Image 1 (tube, helix red, strand yellow):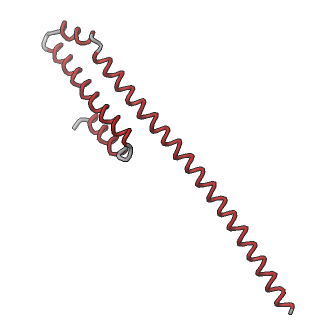
Image 2 (cartoon, one colour; image 1 turned 180 degrees about the vertical axis):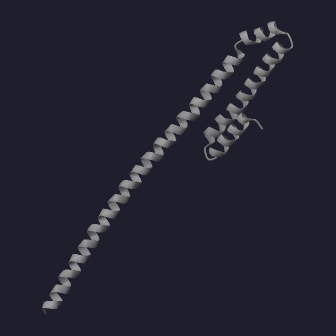
Image 3 (cartoon, rainbow, N blue to C red; image 1 turned 90 degrees about the vertical axis):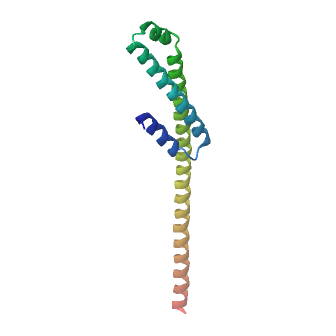
Length: 127
């Protein structure tokens, strides 16, 4: 398995819970395989002395279009992950605020109860 295949497989496993990213990874896998095929074909043509055919293939801009499509998919994936991270950060900040408020309320309530108990004990002690 190539480094590229391993990287795509890892991305697929890391985004298993995100159907949008899974679809993008499928597209990325197809596009990268097409690009590698195009590269190999160009190299093979050149190595076998068919420079004109290799150049003709290059001039079709098929390989460039594949790379542009790959970049677009990667940009979409990156944007999606940034949005998810932003949402998770907001959830984290909200959870911290709630925790702080609950702890503060708990501390105030505890001191109130301690104060009330102290007053009651003090009254009982005087009687």
